[in-house]
Length: 180
Image 1: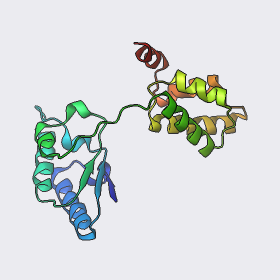
Image 2: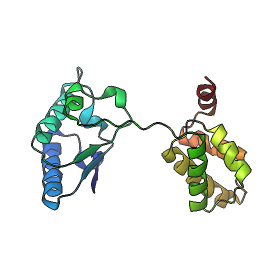
Image 3: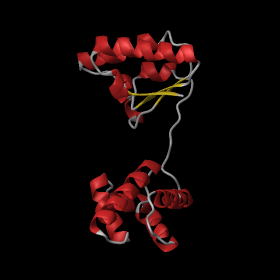
Image 4: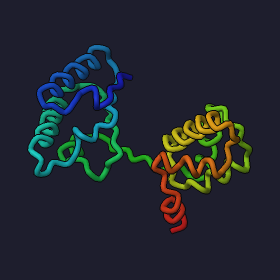
């Protein structure tokens, strides 16, 4: 796997075109699967922004000549340009994990960050954050570990709730959506 973050390619059309050609050529030469992470800016639906439209256009043109396997990631699935969609063999949408999967993710992340948490708290976390993704859980667990270490306190549901604010995890909205 050859992974490139979109920030490495830039958004200046000339620089992006050269960087994209370079990484795609390298991936082909190595026989590697190519991953462009957070490709939002290159696959965004075109509108009145001429500069960004040029970025998408150049991206499409360069991709036409790539003969390898390419994955693009985005969190903005509703804002992908139709020309990109039409060139994709598969579009894979990932949904937030169900309750059991969330519990397993919480357990793995809590163990990874060496938090002293019992099964009851893991169940509470899975219910309290019903729309949390694996990335959300990892980020929150890491933040709670740092907070608890710095403040010399035990991880509790209140600590997780408090830290969730700094991760942009809206508890009220999350619980409302889970109940509807």
